[in-house]
Image (cartoon, rainbow, N blue to C red; front, side, top):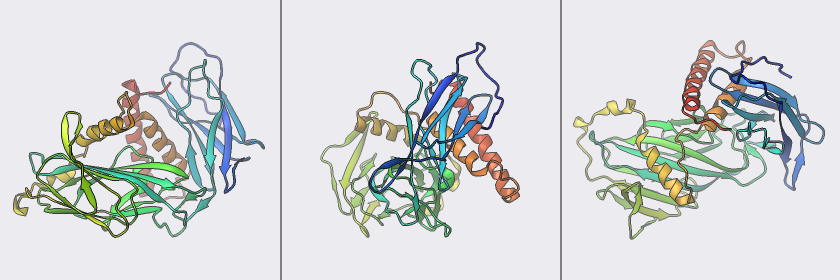
Length: 367
């Protein structure tokens, strides 16, 4: 047990809240309880962010925590198995419906487990005042097996795909992957984080410079579902795609839509006839955050899933998971990592804590 003394934000004493469940390990045949797995309860509040308590799963895979909850904070569980951190959804802090049947699924690892592209949806905005276009690129990955894909000692990407090196302002949005585990280099998007069995989402955001005449997508994998949405009528699209007869209307904006199922080595080209001469392009836009179309793609995803409630671009639970993962990677290792890396960890942690504080203050917490 960590036995940490925590500040409390609630004045009245509360009964201890039970939170528990089972650690199960995926196998080729079935799920089996897993004993001896370290489970950590994390708390993220306005005045404290970090681990609250820890325990080992019992012989039957079960675990349990009893704690005095702060209802203004968010709590999450993590389990460490075979060098990989697995996280639960935020736990309930309502004593009338405590989480006592949480299942955290862990698995053995492989450096060769197959990763498939279940879907990819690209949204290209109309030219802005400076001629640049904003792009949202939402990739749905799937690990269909029972082994978690990991980089291994060679640090090979767990998944990668080509992306034109003309793009600028590359950024990773709210995803199932930490931005620290996703890189864009040498014309490739590379994921170095583990990919557990099941479905995962990767949200990429970038800009197309005003000087770009053609943007080419080259496919390294079959995308079982691919869609391309473009906000204006000027660009032309060529490749193994068909254009929908009617535009897709999202948040009052009309998007021309193409769909297809590209296979390896296929290319899809977007030709921009309104590209401006290179000498007049304002390249300072590379320093600008890519945020605008996140709201559009959120509305599009809500429409596709028939949801009714708005979705935050950076949900609290995503920020909590990123902070917990960052701490799990670095906490207690100051003497082992280079000073520059440790300083980088402290800076990233501080930035995440500030964002979480703002999110919780705005009512974005989970209860």
